[in-house]
Length: 438
Image 1 (cartoon, one colour):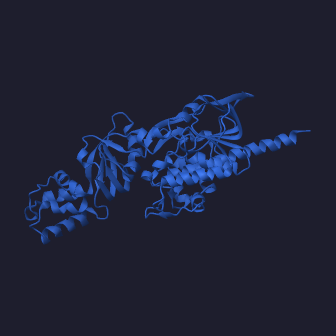
Image 2: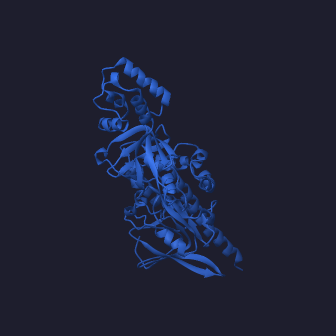
């Protein structure tokens, strides 16, 4: 856009991530003048890291199934927007522009390679440009322009260091505070708190898990199709997830770690509470079935090393550490394996404790839990109930779903409703003004 000190619009959108992109197009399609302000030199910076750069676009389940994956208050809030803008609606945007997608067995939807997150962002940038919306890049907003009218706060726009953006309605889609290098530095929450909104305390969600006594030599090892469980210090199961796990130089990551991180965070935030992580390496087998399988192996191959019992379940570098956890002598032969040790091996395969949780870094999470209290936003329109003319969408809200494309779908859906609703309010006011004229 041509830079000027004062930019006027019908709808001003602050933040060009997933929600802001869809909001901009939805508002522009309603025939109003739209300006999208983005602090980065391009749109969709955080989309670029989705799914490890492959971009987990959404989930293939019904919108009702997707909604129910969120915690109850969040699921209730998302219902109107999920039925207004579905996963099918979003995928049509990409399909209409030539991108092919595929669905994994777990329902996660990705672009067909070699297409990746960069291509998704390019298509969505084109999607915004086609609408005629104006985009101001490299423009960090520094604050909101809010005035009081008849005792009620009303938004009039926003400011950057050297510009004023005036608008009839404003949409905040600034994201959360995870991965601050992408621009999500929590600015929106500060502005909204100052404007009178309640900000629910922030916690890590969909984040890697840092463990105590880390085995750095395990970094890069992946475990596939396992069940990961979080347990309290007293042994109570806090959370579980089925899928893949990746060891890192600080602990664990991958879909399973991300999926259980929020429940762990909620638990260990209470002083004195601790949690650990365990892995079921044979989730398809019950304890008894695995026990019988190992007994058969001992009968059939008594001269094999005892390590052979755990070898099928983990990559080579983990065979000896896993056996050691089970108290198994690596030089022992199966014919000499005590029954007590055999049972310990079975128990370890079904519940290998890989460490106590040291921390869950909020700044490394794909999603942050907490944000604007949902009771202060109308779920039918995404309108603030605190400030007139203000709309909120995406991760700035207190919404955090599980791993699997759920959070991007929440951003697409709430962004669409916010954009459509903000534009409708502009049109309704214009119509009201026309009718009021003599």
